[in-house]
Amino acid sequence: MTSPHDRLDPDGLATRRQVLGDAYVDNALAQADEFGWPLQELVTRNCWNDIWNRPGLARPTRSLVNVGILVALNRPHELKVHLRGALNNGCSEEEIREVLLQCVAYCGFPAAMDGMRVAREAIATYREEQQTDD
Image (cartoon, rainbow, N blue to C red; front, top):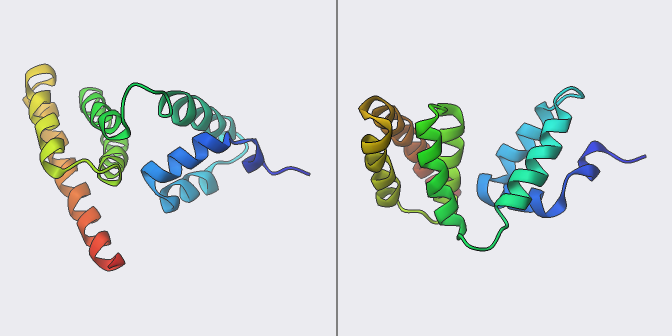
């Protein structure tokens, strides 16, 4: 008998783990019940394999694009997740800050300010975790 995990796209799952980290992905998969499992399959295949593994943009660039999009859409939870991904992908804090400043012109001050707040928290958490891992 196969597990639902066996139906996940292996390349998409590997990319998802590389960008977001094993702990985040394991938690997301563990929380997925029968109702939500098809969404895990779709996001792993369509987003994490078909989009993230396309040629043309490097992973750090894709991460920075996501940060801007998520600020524009006012999705603070996903923004926090993708800020961690951006840091995991080698984006600098300065690059992230510049994306957030760019959002002022196209998304408005409130959206950019919320993005800055989320980024400050995400970066602080990331730094703490990096120090504990050392």
